[in-house]
Length: 288
Image (cartoon, rainbow, N blue to C red; front, side, top):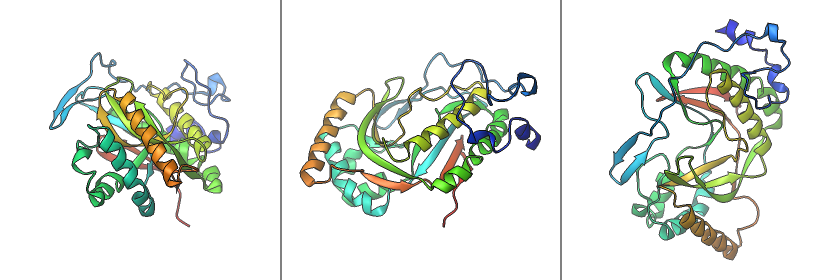
């Protein structure tokens, strides 16, 4: 595996500008064609033609791809924890949205928020006290024999950026309540978007992940990524009603005198990768 990693480039390679998007599977643009190894012979099954549907206690939840024996869901992300003091400030905002928009659930769970929003202690613990994530790539299915290759290349590519990240010690500003709908329009998300501090650093990391995805014939991230964390979700496309709720939240923040500046800030601490139920540390910034 070390030989494979070395063949695809040293740690200095990723200090250069991220590779441009292209239909060819290029990893490092400055390598000569004769020196470049072909992509590893690791291919996905044919793309699914249909979505998998699973029944829950509170409705039908649609996966972005069906479960296939031997496939594992791959997700690369920056973990985010909301500071305790900020959670208390966000509780009335989240409760306000839930009161206006029924059908919201705790992110990554099937727990309806209508059962929690009147109990602020439970709201803080269950909804805001969990670990959130900023996605650096699409969640996609990979085969078991691809796992070691993907994880090793992610570490090689992203750890080589560590020197620059360590010097910057960058902070991530979450500045805007926003509504997102997934590609299939099967789920809507109440989110907090990064629009200033940390945006350029996160975008650079997304490009690095895209380079690894290309090598494994995996779909790249969105052309114009909008980094964010999602706080709650709902079935279907309810973006119209949820945007009205967000508008009310912004009006509430204005009346409370908290509409200016960011919603909260956290320090970048590293990058994680989850494959199935197993987690891998890709890059970690040590505590001072």
